[in-house]
Image (cartoon, rainbow, N blue to C red):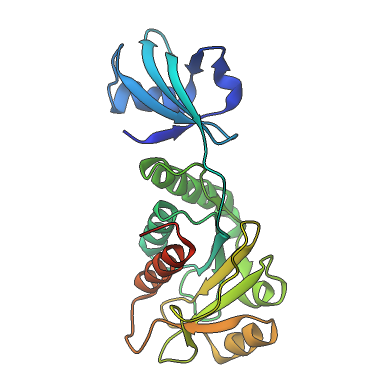
Length: 245
């Protein structure tokens, strides 16, 4: 069962009292019963094993029988700056990169991007992406959900990226191999990875990224779909940082 995220204010001494969407999901979708164990994680990176005590009424109550502190962060965090993709491809990138442990996902508005978020629908879209990220992080037992950030113009990101070191992913060997590029090592650092849209980066964007101090990296000679490139690059970085493998 996933490690569901809760708020610390839902803990009452040795009991956890759940309500709202999570309570409904556990009872209606997962059909948990009294006596079953569930795994819960709060915003303080504390994880609880709890036994369901009561499912009557609108809420759910569980009794804590074990808890543990989250492991100390030993690696830099990873921010994925992904150009918005069409259809369900963006959903897929958000889901898989969240499973792989990225800490933040920034949708980029790229020059060649097919999809541009509509202002009147942005709040709903961000909420939907956050749900996808949170559910994926729960499924993979992450210690915290990724943050879905407000969309940003690609060139604005290149000139003002809030990271210790940032990379732009290019095709056709136009950069250092992702296995060979130097990475920061300290836990407080943040690595940014910018991945383009289906049509690739425009020349102006590549120039802006270089002017903004981003390092060009590549996955080799293969031409991958944008969503495949994103997840492949995140996997390589997380492996090198010690989060995988």
